[in-house]
Image (tube, rainbow, N blue to C red):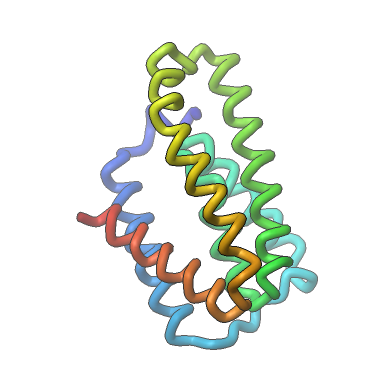
Amino acid sequence: MWALTRINPEIFKITIGFLLLGYGLWMLIRSKSSAKMSQKPMLDGVVGLNGGFMGGFAGLAGLLPTLWVGMQNLPKNVQRGTFEPYILIVNLVGIAVFFIAGKITMQVGVDLLWALPALIIGSWLGVKVYPLINDTVFRKTVLVLILLSGLMLLV
């Protein structure tokens, strides 16, 4: 939250957009990565800390952990079982911090109500489709979504 008043959002957006494009292209071209979670616990902590920072600053808590776990070529269940609980916990902490700081307004509640149907439908579809896809399709789907996110930030 502290960074919200100190970092230029436009520069941050462009930087993240290029990061997502570069990562997505690199991971689609490169089939294997040498990063191993069990061999780099300090780096895992750095990724988690920066994910928490990005969650408080821009609502992107899961970005770096998702990229980091994706680099390790883990099975889809391990990837999902790693970044989904992390994202949930960091977002709950973020909501609590914003609430305590008085940043949760009536407009935030109204916006949430408008977004809720799309969130519910999207989550339901994801839960239904997930068991039907294999690790390769999961990996490529995540990478394509990362690429699209990067492009959307840059246009």
